[in-house]
Structure formats: C-alpha cells, structure tokens
Image 1 (tube, rainbow, N blue to C red):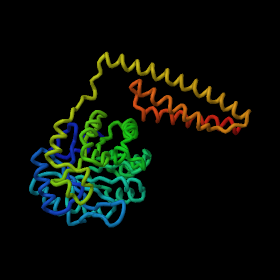
Image 2 (image 1 turned 135 degrees about the vertical axis):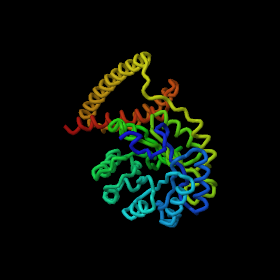
Image 3 (image 1 turned 90 degrees about the vertical axis):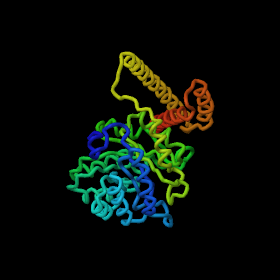
Image 4 (image 1 turned 180 degrees about the horizontal axis):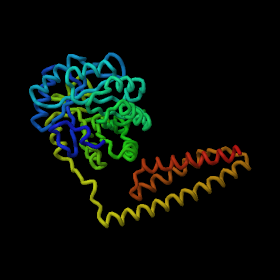
Length: 353
C-alpha cells in the first residue's frame, strides 16, 4: 500500500496529500462556504465530522445523517471529494448511501476491536479509502490490529492517521505526538500511507504549522487539518481550527524534502552514527554491570533497591549538564529515567535470587 492506493482520481500523487475542512458540519451554509473557499485554494478532499463522539455528554455531538446531504451537495457544486469519520455499522451504511468518498476511523473507535470489526464487516466488498487514526493510548499493536481487521475483509486502500496520544501531562500539546510510535509503524509497514493530524496533536492553531513541517520532515504522506470559516465560533474544537486563508499560508510555507537522495557524505555520517551507537551500547552494558554489583552489595547489607536521594542527585546533576552540552533537558530526563528503571529491575532480580 503506497500513497497512490488511497488517492482518488484527480488528486496529485505528491506530498502532502491534504484533507481539510471543519471539525464538525454545523449548518449547510457553513459547510458550503468552507468548501468553496478550500476548493478555490486547490484542496481536493474536504473533511467534516457528521457524528462527533465527545468525551462527556452534553456537548455538540454532530448533526447526524442530515449533514451527509450537505456533503453530497458540496460534491455537486465544487467537484470536491468528501470524507467523514465513522464509528458504527450504521454510520458506514449511511455514509456509503450518500456517496462519501473517503472514511476514517477515530481514535476512540480504534481502541475498541469490537467496533473496528463491525466497521470492517460493513465495508467488506467496498472499494473505498479508509484511514485509521491511532488509538487514544500509545498502543502500536492496537493500531496495527485495527488495520489488520480491515485488511482481513479484503480492504486494500488503507492508510493511517497520526493524531497523537492522550496524557494527563498536557504541557504543550493537546495530545503528545510520541513520534517514535508512527515511525515504528512505518518501519514495519514501509508502504503504508501515513497522514498527520496536527490539529488534534497541537490543540491550538499556532502549533499546526510547526507540526505539519515536522510531519513532512519525517516523510509523512499527507495532512488532515481542521479548517473553519470562523474558527472562534466553531461548535467543537474551536481553538485548533484555522481559516481557509491561514491554511493556504501554512501549506505554502512547508518545505518538502526529498526522501531518496543519499550522497557519499551522508553515508559517511551514517557510519559515524553506527559507530557511536555501538559505543553507547557498550557503555550502557558497562553501566548495568556496575548496577548489578551495587545490587549485590545491597543484598549483602540488607538495603532497599531504590535510594531516592541518590536518584535525585543524578537527575539534578545530569540534566543541567545536558543542557550545557546542547542536549534537550526533557530528552535527558527520559533517558535517565529509562536507565534507572532498567537498573532497578536488574537489582531486584539479584535481591530475589
């Protein structure tokens, strides 16, 4: 499955493939106005939420099937393709009945294998692109499982959407990108098209451009971005939507780099990386040997494994040191936490022998 497997006729096979439109279809006028502006700027595929699964009841949960008629009129008047999210068998049947061209499965639905299987069976024998958002929690196997359920019923036009992962620790992003997870998905399935959803990752419109650029730098195939004619008045996710004119600016600003060019200079640098990685592994192995020796000492002297004062000392010393070496402090904290966790594990093994 490559990018052209999810492309619709007339959509260029070039990065980024763009899907854009309001988070929610609110009124027929709002949908049509957005469509005309986006179409004038060259957007070929419009998105709009018809059924909106909200975290809590009481919010706007979508206009329902009536909005599919509005999308059908968008196709008729602008020639755009239209797309929406489906979460149940009924949604699938309604969307297909109204001629929706592309479907996606949302993060909450991806996390439910029963729901994904129901959708897969409803789509069996249908030739339509289907994109699968990552599950709410960082679970790569669950994401792959959803794609496999669709593939197992014969669907071949599949792609993935990276929309970030939920976390209590919301500092910058609405949903943490955790880029390593979609990178691993791409490593396992190199031909699987992957789109980035910077609207849901960022949660604010100011983050859409830098997140879109990062996705392009990581060789993503496309972007799905929420665009509303009057974002501040949107009925859902107002803070993360941009106007069509701002979307045009964002897309025009993106630098699209080539994937395949590999010069001799790059090969030399990659060999250096390989050598440094080998050195890192050797150093980590040595550090773990020392940790095991410490574990033996603690066992002999009836000491607990975790010494919080010592761990605090390491963090307080190494993190500022990393900053002075132009290494991101949060990255350094993550590395130290992982090393500490493995050291504790190995010492626990020794204490329980």
